[in-house]
Image 1 (spheres, rainbow, N blue to C red):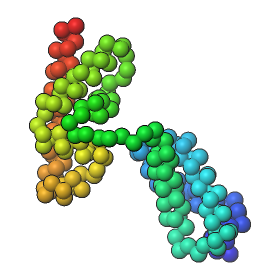
Image 2: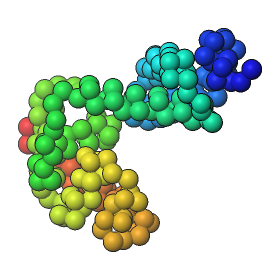
Image 3: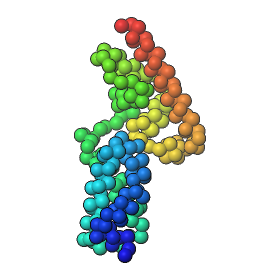
Image 4: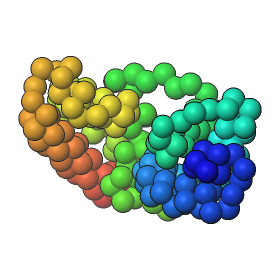
Length: 188
């Protein structure tokens, strides 16, 4: 009996085989995009039910069920992330408020309200002080979440050049940020 037919009949062994063969990719994909292992497991279970229904109702003839199932999970995660966004954001390159989430990447956690306000001010001022080309590159990478290879193609540079430039721009932003934050904290 074929694998698809065994899944259609909900054979435990076939379901376990599919999960074992795909969970690594699914877990990795979801956790790298802000999800947890528990969310990945739940989504995989939900997609397993849908896959079995599709196999039954549509009588699908799939060549690579593992790849199809993995794609179902990935697409469902992306759809879930889209639905969870409360309102569409308008991203403006010169609006430093949208970069506040970058502060979290510097290892900061919320403490006192006064310190948070000073960090926000430091981010705003630092953002205005970095070069426009760095602002553009960091905007594309961190806010628009574009891949470096795509940014390189758009800018007409090599991937390695853009990779190094992004690191230098980030370092410049971080250095300015720390100096501004230190000054704000010293000034009280």
